[in-house]
Image (cartoon, rainbow, N blue to C red; front, side, top):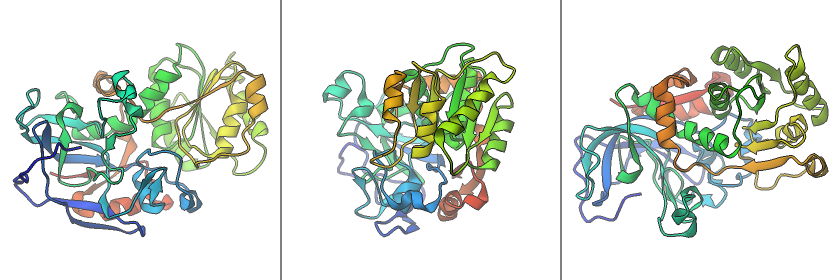
Length: 384
């Protein structure tokens, strides 16, 4: 979010952007003028990820429950919770780039610095902000969540406090992957793993794959990941060869699917059902299966976000088994940890980027992300 200013930024080049509309169109057009304030920086966005799970089209018929800022959902559904596309606006919130100018109050950043953009700028005054849970701020201005323009454009204005300097060893590609990694880190902070503890990850989309990599880096084992898509499970096996995969049937009884998944943990491994299950789809049947696959007394961490109301959950099973169901909303204070984690080499996220497009090809990039036949995992839009 930019602090109000009276003078438009003087930019060295045109500023093309990717827009979506309330009637579900996408198009490229010039960005509005930028008005950086004294606490802001102007950033040349060099890499930007497209956020959103490639799911069947019926998934988009109803807005999902809270503002996770999925680019695909804002395009296809026109809303996420209370964030509604009322006017044409610019997509994107997974950005990294180069600072080209700084406001008069900014002392820790300088032109030429390479930064990752933490998209949420909270109010700093409410109870949630003052107690450190700024991700829960009701007044947050989140890049790429309407009405706030996103970062899929050449130049973007952002509060300097929420720009994180990248070490020399991290590329702009790495920087643009820190946002989804921060989501996963927050999930693991709320439902942590121990060394040698088994873990189940439901969903092999980008968030599920990053959760799988993070679970491995945490020393968890054995690891099992599920999905309804064979190609995604094949990708997961190549990405983390130590994992077991389970092809989730698209019909049937969740309890029976959970029993098959549980068998993978004990198959010659002297293991047990997982005490922590990370549900990364938000799909009702998957959440239901996760509840039965979890060990009694364990936790189901729902990282994926589904519909506003989810029926048919096994309430009595969860109650009698004392299984805690937890949720996350974005992240707080996760970015420095994410940077160090990638810098250390414990997690390599670059293999997740299966497709790259230029900024001028941004419409094609979003269409590719929405096309299941293209088998994309993470798509990046880059600009030199």
